[in-house]
Length: 244
Image (cartoon, rainbow, N blue to C red; front, side, top):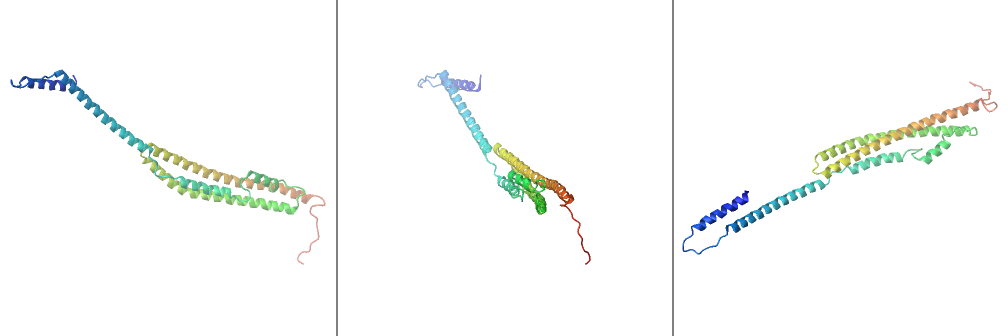
């Protein structure tokens, strides 16, 4: 027998006892114990259902609070700083001196300035090409060092952003904030990889132009030596007067 049934039984017994000791002159009251017990059970069940509904509403309210926390956005954003760092690196690469990162421009340079020395080219043209190649190599070295300096300058900004993002991630109140903090950390890593790519590209460009300069210089040296040793067109001894 459960609690509700025991309560109904006790109530029925109490009322029956009281009804049994009524005065002789009192009006006869018809009482149905079974009906009363059923009514008590129905009321108790209704009360239990109300309590269950209250608990259900409390659970739903707590669920809504948790969902609101999970949907709360991260109050910190490092996107602007990361974009500015990438823009600084891109500007350096786009303003590369002389031979830039352009396929057509590279092809034109290797078809003219870095082309094999022609026997029909004048000595002045050979000298001009050699000087142009030296200037290209020097400019590429300067560009590489400027790119490295910019990337090193970004390290302090990256450190500050990483510290703020880790702090925001640890203090996240919901899944959305934790996810956004993780996404921004991935964006920071992507920015660092972009800086590393820029440094490698600038360094390799400088090395390639220097290697191309050496290769062209060797070819030009062979052509100049050939002209020097050619009969009739090379060096002709002449009489000179020294010390007046």
